Image 1 (cartoon, rainbow, N blue to C red):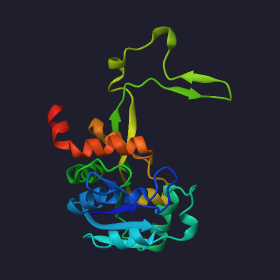
Image 2 (cartoon, rainbow, N blue to C red):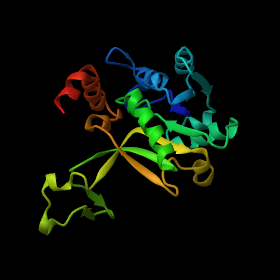
Image 3 (cartoon, rainbow, N blue to C red):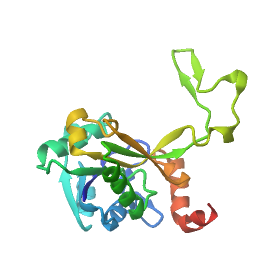
Length: 230
């Protein structure tokens, strides 16, 4: 069994009240709390927030323990790792505990996928598991004020279909890690054995802008039809 950690700050510059904004008929955070609550691999859910509305709303869900975070962990620059570390340091956990980080802004996931990620972590003896999707995008990386470098050789430009299965992006949807790994690294990823878990393409979308909100809502409203097309 694993502990789900759901970080849900109250403030958002791009979308006011983002974690509570209605998406496909329910508050955004509900998609994560419902999936975690229905996952057999999750026995408790810790919602960390600075916002009373979020805390009171989350507390009505099964398995949820809503915890108010300190103000210094609710700034724009606050990292998710800092929030996780606060939870680990203020709560007593068994040494063999496994954690699942579920970000509300990546709501396209199922209870079955959560279970599979936890099971993969245990079967592989992994220190961490991260959900990814293959991508055929061609990237340019900024290496200086006026310098950009491509992620490919321009003189032998790859076909996009040739890139599938060779490069991946994080979905932001599911991260699994052990307490032992966390105590050693204070990081959700990495460790002696980090495992990538392939997820469906639609899970890659995260809500960081109004356009993202429109895209994710469209996917959630038509999820069954989308799954039937692939």
